[in-house]
Image (cartoon, rainbow, N blue to C red; front, side):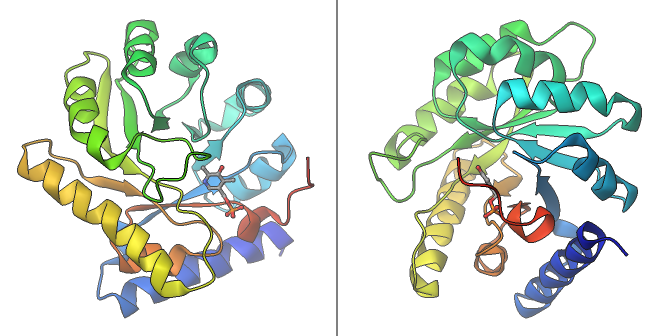
Length: 229
Ligand SMILES: *Cc1c(COP(=O)(O)O)cnc(C)c1O
């Protein structure tokens, strides 16, 4: 078995164990393999193990991989900060964007989604730690942004995404994830119908699943440590 195959199995076991501990159905949590910085060959190996959904952060790098792996019919998720001037190629090749943090970006993606493609599935990114350095809208802005995104014709608003600041204490991490879950529930009380919480990474997927994550975004635990850039 390759390292990637073994790592994928280990991550899936962690997901199942976390679901059991949280009394959740493992079928409610999907794994997004974050392949940023890794070559197409690594993605191909993971795909051979049955992994279908891959997350990328950098547009140019992602486009090269999407082209190299077009034969596999993979599902690509854009999860990084997105400059408006790079939105067109994202609208043209990705299935999901997790990092919607402003209306202008959502409007461009909707306008640029090619005719004949299914709607682009999107999450609004929320800054639950309220750090100025992190991207994402504030909790207070989330309702208005979600309402505006929900009516764009070529997007389908699925839920919320967050990247809490790394914390040593598991209780702090759980609280951040629970805040995102509570926000989703409040937005659903307003009629938004959000079914997705994109939260949890290699180091904290258990906490995220305990707090209600439906997509965990895992890179390092599958592909290994990324080279420092
Ligand atoms: C890199 C990245 C991940 C994966 O993080 P790991 O710690 O390597 O699992 C998840 N989400 C986002 C938005 C990322 O940029």
